Image: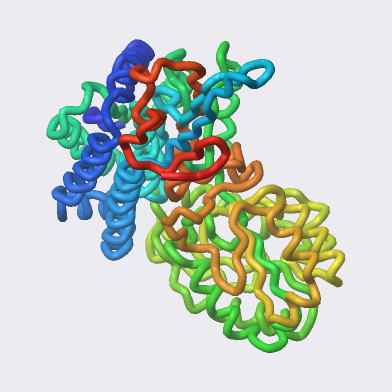
Length: 493
């Protein structure tokens, strides 16, 4: 590892988390409007890095300028979104039930709101160096909840992470936030990650990456004396159902649409559509032929780093080595040792159902078309794929009328159900769900995108018969914040 980014010792890790613990009550006490100004300032400081940040990240990740410019915009937008959430104030879910003295037994005055849970450790992602990394959604939402954050940078883009961390530190000083409200370590040691998760002062963990990495952190947290929540987003095959009438009418156009999605960003999105299921037909054959032709026309492209390429080559090779799997794309020669070839393969529904290996994610520009003999086999194959971030139904009105059962099953497959679209591209808005049943994420009740991502870092607290002058502002009778609250069972401002 570069000496500029030394491995953090276990003693230094403990110091980071102790610092975060000391910062927590100070940060919680700061008014939400001031926290909002802090998030806005972080966005400003990131933008102030200008071309230096973009050029540095291009060198480290091989991602193109246009992609990084867009992702930087998404990252600063997320920060400002959480700032606005804090100013609106409704996010605390303030609830008031007044006392009823003549009830038997007497009903006490009870008031409830959400509060931050404590220091949060965030692990940066490799495929989104801004939006899911140092100042990404996990960090922004945790800071919005009033939780100090310790970020462990991803080793694939250390200089980028250092630059963004420096921007956050500038914002911390400018806004006079408590010292150590944000801390950063660039160690690439697995032991450092384990120590951060298991430190007694850590209250929660955010992670975006592989199943093996996310599950390891989850297991580290589970064996603590006091287990803590680990919110790991661990990838997905994002199965797509290709319904019969849609294929008979639009096979070629659907194939072109999905070729673009499968190869977007060299397939390095957690929402990449890696498995496509259809019922054997002329329409499905046309779809496969057109998709294969479209993917053959895509040149090999450079992946984020060598480790991701090696994993892609190994996992795709294992799938293609299966006797019943047929490759539909040509194996062209890459001009660079870090480039990946797009791959399309097919397999029967029967074989797919029986082989768990074929149901696993291949992270990269890879897609497997599952050719099912009938609707029952398609449903069985779909349900064999465990929890997903997304699932998509490509169909006509006739398809949906003929297959209402599929629509009813879809919410139990994934956290986001799409109709006649592609899953790549995650809109950042309050209604977005980026999460899903295990193993897409470790807790499918939450989302990593949108303002509701803050709910991962909070817990409800009730104040019973609390003297009025001691109540938090959100629960005071006169509602000085002017926020939406539930009072005696009815919402009001």
